[in-house]
Each structure stands twice: as C-alpha cells, then as structure tokens.
Image (cartoon, rainbow, N blue to C red; front, side, top):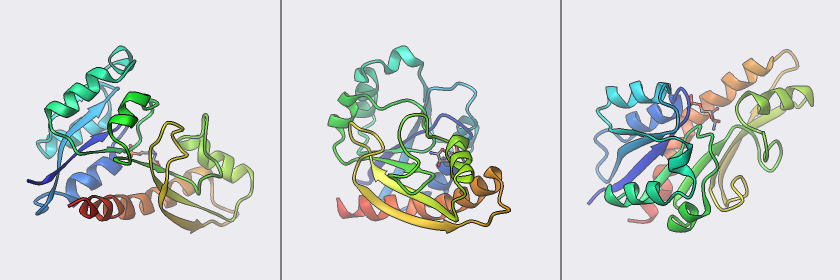
Length: 191
Ligand code: GRF
C-alpha cells in the first residue's frame, strides 16, 4: 500500500505541481487529492492536468476541521502537505495528524514568521531590513503553526539590488527544488 498524501493550497499551486510531478509513478508514495479554500485557485487547473481530484471548501467547512478530517479519513490520507495554504490549521486536525502535516515558510524561521508573515509580506520585510540572506524553512505544523519541528532549512544569498519580487523568485526556486524531496525523505521513514 502506497503512502497517501493530500496537498492543501490556496493560490497558484506551483509548489503543489512540483509534488504532482515528483510523486507521479512513485513506487511507494502518491498524491491522492487537493484541498483548497479558493474556488479560483490556480492549483485546481494544475491538479486537473494530473487527474488529481480536488475539494473546494469555504470557511464554514473549516471552522472545526471535523468535516475535513472525515474527508481525509475517507480518502485514507496518511500525510498532509501545506503548499501556500492561507488558513490556520484547526487544532483537531493537528492532533489527528501529529507530525504528519508539513508546511513550507519562505524565510529562515523563527525570523520573519508568525502573524501576517506570508507571501510577499515576508519578502518585503526581508528587503526592508536589508538582509543579505533569506531562505526556506520546511517544518511540521503544530498548534502554534510556524513553531512546529523544523525539518530543513536552506539559506539563499541576496544582493542589495534585489527587489522583494527578486527575493520571492529566488526563494520559490529553492522551494520547488527541495520541498518534495524533504517530504519524500520524511514519509519514507514511516514505511
Ligand atoms: C510560496 O511562496 C510558499 O513559500 C508559501 O506560499 C507560496 C506558494 O506559492 N507558503 P505557490 O502557490 O505554490 O505557487
């Protein structure tokens, strides 16, 4: 039986697509579904191209997480990957999947983490601080969200001429390269 992963995304889904590619025809791991809270998210078209089913659910669905958990159990999901997912994970879901929910943050946590620190906000803050490096953090999700166990970090050097958009591009390239591999390494440990 392959290990089954569901990907949660709220936006374009470029990270999600890297998972679809990386685990296509994988011997022991498969992406079985996509969950999104945004009916116009780019991730839906990407999932369709890989014939991966998706669920769109609004905030009400998300309130306690019980309905999401029921769906994930129905799909026999073993791990959840957050790939640009904008809602907070309810505690019930975190306890249902202890050290089985992965997230990627586009900075070197604990710096530039916490409330409001997502997407371009992160890169604008890094730029404003004149940082000469930023990076990615892949971590487990726990009740305190960005404070789960850190699984992998990689720094990216910046130059003063980099705009926040340039920083975002540099970081996204590293995310694409490393996130599927780090998740694969962790999931294979459970086999
Ligand atoms: C990435 O920048 C990631 O760091 C953050 O959300 C963004 C997702 O981008 N968690 P995409 O939707 O995968 O293109």
